[in-house]
Image (cartoon, rainbow, N blue to C red):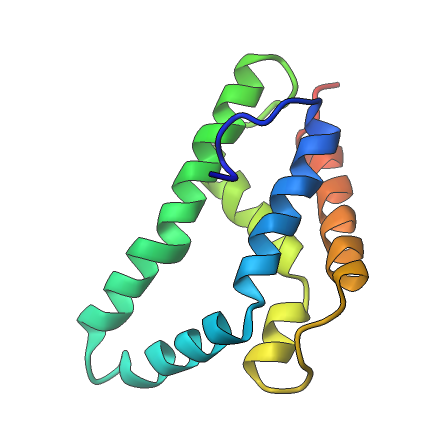
Length: 131
C-alpha cells in the first residue's frame, strides 16, 4: 500500500505517495465512477456515503496514520492528522481532478501530475515540516 512506511526522508516520500495517489485518482475510470456517484447520490445517499467512506475517507485515515508515524519520528509537527491528510490530498489534486471531472481536459502527462504533487509537498512541508 502507498500508505505503508516507505523508506526515505519525508521530503522524498511525500511526493512519491502524492504521485501514486493522483495517478490513481486521475484514471479515467475513476473519474467516470466519481461522476456516476455524484449524479446518483442525491437520490440514493447511501451510495454516496459508501463511496466516500470506502474511498476518500479511508484514504485520508490511512494517510493520517502515516503522518502520525512520521511525526513520532520527529519529521513533522501536526496537531490534527486527519485535517493535515485532507489538506495534502486537496493540494495534490490541484485543479487537475476538477478539470478531468468536468471533462475540460484528459488525464494530464506524468510530468504535470508530478509538478502539481511536488508543489503540494513543498507547501505542506512548509506548514508541517519539523523546524
